[in-house]
Length: 220
Image 1 (cartoon, one colour):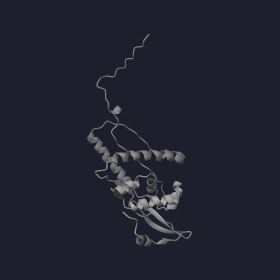
Image 2 (cartoon, rainbow, N blue to C red; image 1 turned 60 degrees about the vertical axis):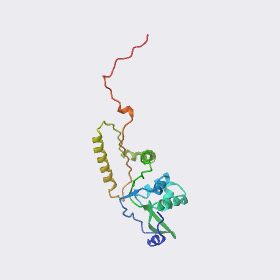
Image 3 (tube, rainbow, N blue to C red; image 1 turned 135 degrees about the vertical axis):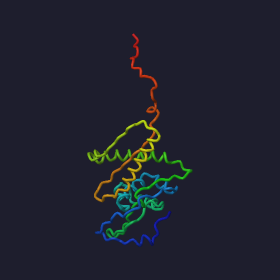
Image 4 (cartoon, one colour; image 1 turned 90 degrees about the horizontal axis):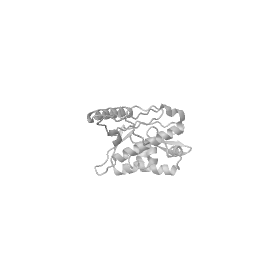
């Protein structure tokens, strides 16, 4: 994929400084399936940029201020994302005599479809869980009491394969409902992570005989 053509960008009207930039309606999904796109995702700064521009248009300067990173570095990352078809320019605005470009994602949600020769799905799942843990800890440190609104649960249940499939489908449906929820411009951004997985070996073992509660003999 390539950067947006100059003619297409030039066709975007330049808004005066007192006119706000509104969030456009983005496609619900984009299938991510190329090596270029996977490489673009393979950087923690670019992942954060994509989360910022998922719900609001932003300039390189605004993103840089948010992440405390030099604007030139953010500009490079935006170019990589744009070349991969993951970010786009949606507005231009005149700010103190300079035309600023506003970026959003190319879709609200990216769905990963790994090529058959790439075995990255399990690695990606672990990365997602690690990122979620990092964000939760960061939010707890910076948001204070507001993090109390978080709801966590970590149950373990013995299920048949058929019932596992039922619950996986229900969770997927719930996630799809959440992802298609219309964003509230006055609301706050919330994160959600869930993983239904086969518990490790220690949790799988069962006893086939009564538990022996007899206390051990002590040497005199």
